[in-house]
Image 1 (cartoon, rainbow over the protein chains, first blue to last red):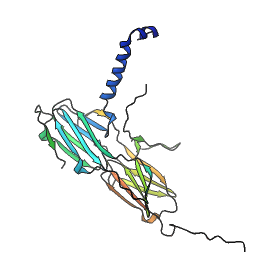
Image 2: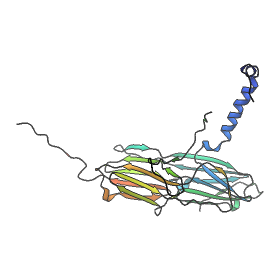
Image 3: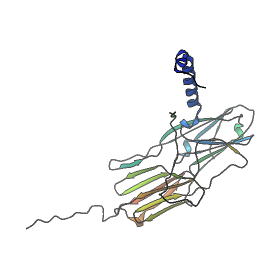
Image 4: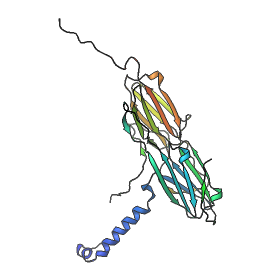
Length: 138
Length: 135
């Protein structure tokens, strides 16, 4: 739809509308946070994979509530001594916290997670039960 | 319009001009830390999905190349609904100087992180050139 400059000027709501659309788009995008996730669904089961190399598995925390999965963990930065210097410093360090919403409620009892070769793999079967539960990594 | 979303994106590796791949896979440039220590240089590379059997470290002339081969694990009968990252091999090449003792480079992989320790050669640590006067 094309509008003239005058029309836009006379309709302040249009600009407001455009801005809120923009904002919504930004906040609904998952890619703003570390780590990036891939989500696979087959109707009654979902699989979330994420690449989090170098994470201390003791710090990985997966919690499930309703249809929401929260992942957190941390990767401490290397301690450097005085005579050491960085030529490249590209690796991600810090604490992450990421939430993924699935199209169904999750059976927290049956969630399975593995962390191998720096890749976290979580299998989440569907259920209507809604109780939050913490899942430990095997 | 430019998106202001800050993405944690994997960078695809660039091919040299005129070179083509023979495998139908994406190749990413792994992020690295390169730390110079007193007696060695340490390279840490994030290569999730790689283990000691699927990573190659090669040295040819002054080029040290790391290559990690990935077998993508696709859950059976599942459809990908959110895709924030791609899966593929990793490759990155570094130049190394004569200062490095090439016979004693050590490589280990742990939780998808490749660690290379490049020791500095003993005799190359410092070399003093005598300056002669014109007597």
